[in-house]
Length: 377
Image 1: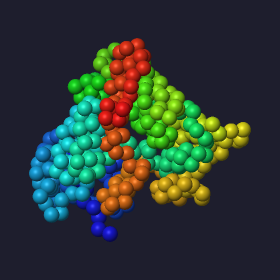
Image 2: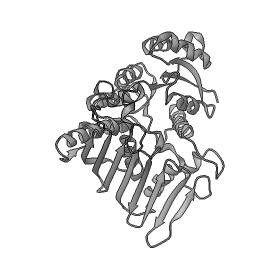
Image 3: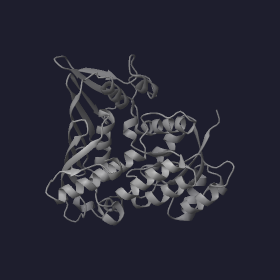
């Protein structure tokens, strides 16, 4: 089977997320890295793309040049990944979808709910895929948890508790570091800092595993380092459409926590627990029974968990392989075999609607807000 052609915007030299995308896209031989506009500095971007093996005539200076260069090529790219700063996602995604390209966008998909709804409409009109990189949902044991919930193995879900809390921005003396500062600058990050950066991963995970959507929420946000305009800590209570109660904590000042992303799902007949720092294990406790550890790669898993297990049992799955699983699902979808677990533009707009609802709630001293985008109410 011929490789699909893949292009990337952003994610240049020194990028945090760029290598994960390049490893993920090429891990299974499904995509060829064919085009790139990797840096806001045109010459540096062209040079870096060529060092990564992109042909000189497809190493572009910016995304507009790449769009113009690719749209009429007979061998044009099948998928473009957008890994640029948040404020640029909408313009780039809209332009590429309208030109008939499939898109994978980093989160948050857009800065506003209105932009998010527009992306959903454009994707529908174009008939192309607009996926959003909620890659934690592609870990095998997360897929196992979702399948167990869907199969009724823990009964109706009553409660979900999740958090994504780390301490890597907890040093006030490092507040002016450019790699940190932009995350708390409204001009670059939007209306929210930590919740839009990490909290929406936890919120998406709750919806993904519970197979339900967030309906309302109440939030408390704090900027614990006074120089920050946006929050570095948030606590969010939410209710899902099916009645599940949700609790979410996200923080970037929890010194001592490294990655800190975990989730617990409690049903009528059992509970599940998964943590990103130990992604091979899913803990399952049946009501009145002992806790069991379900291992990635063992026999008897649900199909989606088995399909996305990459290495032998007892060998750890890594973050780039979770990203690679997103690209596997994308390749299938592009070839006409869509996968149910692929996060899409609807997930993206639900996330940004929840961000704006949380900010409004925090400003209103925790008043409950409708967390759904208008188009899904």
